[in-house]
Image 1 (cartoon, rainbow, N blue to C red):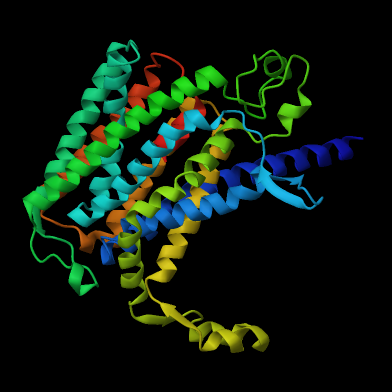
Image 2 (image 1 turned 90 degrees about the horizontal axis):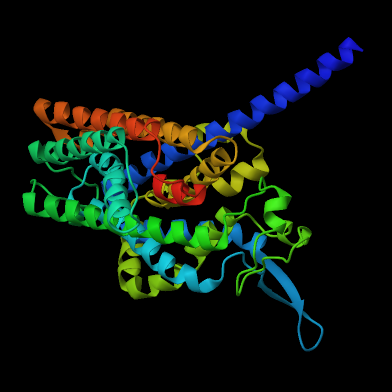
Length: 414
């Protein structure tokens, strides 16, 4: 009997460890790899931000589409694909989609204005400042002294980090001659900072809109108790069931999954407005030097049926890091979403702060040559990073003025 119990305990422990290993591998492996591949592409093609954003949105939409598709019988009895009912109607998504798409485009477009990846990572962490100001001005939130002090730390850290890049010996060089910038231009750099600032402000508005949407329509997850689901009032245009109808609700994806899918899927038509820019960026990347898909050193270890077709296959060298960036973005999103369903919001915040710190360290280790800073600038950069991360942790530990939905946190903190 004891042997059987030991086997059960071992099986449960192994399953638990495997689940957590998968989650943290997706968060740290996926998100950190995403940051590295993003820097690889933007260091060579800093103006490729629109193309990167489009590829990410397209892959995430295609990945999520099967989960939201169903079929209905047409006039001749043929199955016609259509979207499943939603927990939230389309109308509240309209402004969210516009804000989300613009914020994503602005964040990636900033690389064209001499913004180094370390500055990009730390500056985007300053969204806490905007969130507090908007929460106080628009939503009437109240914050503790600890939270205010923490935000002051974040503010000082962002300022130090921003000023650090002004000590550049020279701007980063690119492998694409037409995009190379031989000297540091304060005007160009400040334009990039302005773009990131605008993205932070719009992201703050997005957070408020999402907060109000979830408070009105609910934030259902697979862990929501049936009693809470069945007693939820039905909203116009949604699939919210009447009291006692729980099964129909369980057939639909969680609210965060629905939100992530529709924010990306409904954003795709907006890229029609930047189609000329997309074509220029695509032509620039496909014109890069070609490289073999299968390294020669791998050929002896593969079956001839696989190695023969791949031996002479080659692609533009910029395509592979772009594909890796797109796929790792999907892994990163999946990892953060898995994490939020397993731990409290406080733990999610702390894990993501550590993840950003790891991304910053990896960026400096692997791409330090792309960011030519003098010793004083590096001190300012690391001091600013320490203040931002310490302020973020301090804010989290100080409590919140008002609970926020997990889905909103995931979108803002990735």
